[in-house]
Length: 94
Image (cartoon, rainbow, N blue to C red):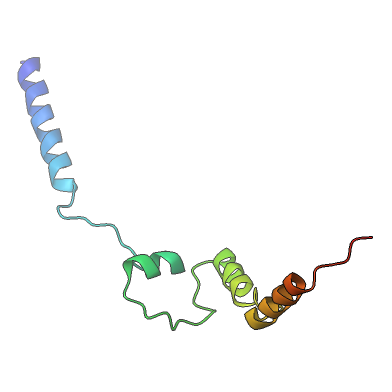
């Protein structure tokens, strides 16, 4: 009789477990892309996003760094002119 009781208890327990698990459960995702790079790769952005359009503080700092990286750069025309002058007028050796 204890085998019948154990089998019935196992059947009842398996029924409870099977009915407790919801069918078709999906994870809730707030945004499909985590950062700007993923949006550029997987999304259909046109690149007109704001510098404040970042997913985390480090991404914001990297965007600010990239936006201001070329502020003090030499214009290409000035660099070419300086290189041509240096090539045409080599320094005198003592």
